[in-house]
Image (cartoon, rainbow, N blue to C red; front, side, top):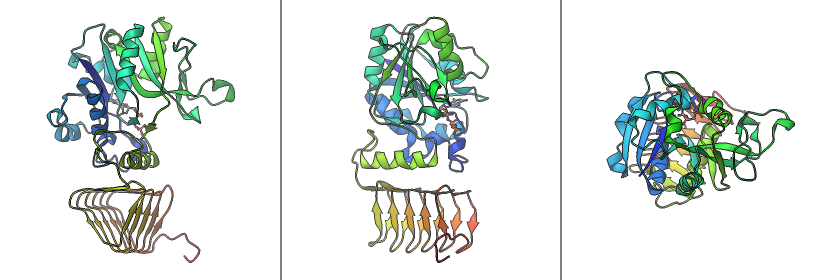
Length: 358
Ligand code: GTP
């Protein structure tokens, strides 16, 4: 039996306003909550039991996640106060059944990856390690925690967000999945906030514990920002990112009850949510349209997220933008890169236009 802790209690501030009502791991991606992609991948890799470490909007997980439906045992552990990544893992300890020397997997709840999870656990067990981290190379490591390893794959340092070229000693970053010997979890201080990245990992090195890194060059994406969220959704629909919860990849995904005009164009791995309405002449390209949203005649939506129940008026151009749940965008508006409209906001027709004829 392999157990896992799935960290899903963060506030998802970078994804606001989408995360005001829905915690990041519960946002729908390619037809199911994002966390379902992670749970089913872990299940298929041999994980039999998952402790969902929740905090922010724990009620949403309780209502919608059922292990029986997903073929895996799920236990929900809720922190009264957010305890940070390490504190959440320590808080999950009484819910674990693994023995002191057995491996426990930990996943960040916002990472989409093609990692061979089973191979990571085997590497950990075969190496007799205290901790084994999944590492991924990135082109620009400045926004991440760097994890250099030696010739034997032993982690030598944990470096938080390097800024100068001298500090960038490797392109390997912590990819948000690791295996702990269970007794390591016992040693995390209880009852207070702990960062696994800033406190637990460096403490393991300081204590001369065996910390290994496994570099995997396959698919990896942190869905922390709106544009990464759109990309992850696209990649799942198109089959670029692997998930057992997307049985049949294709150019787009239309969920039950959606109404699509015959001349509407859906491309680039777009998802159209349940009971959404896409009217005549609309183009939706590489975007996510949540349930019950409505897009009126001639609108063009590219690389954007349209929140649940939101309305996009006729001939709008929405490109690289996020429209919150229930917002109403009047006809003829142009919302371009980076614009975020808060839930329920009503934008008058033509209020925002940027093109040369504006
Ligand atoms: P931002 O606010 O946008 O940074 O997002 P986040 O806090 O949700 O994510 P971050 O990347 O900082 O955290 C990594 C993972 O740990 C995510 O899956 C979070 O859900 C989770 N996490 C962060 N803090 C906590 C916490 O206090 N408790 C629990 N249970 N999980 C947490």
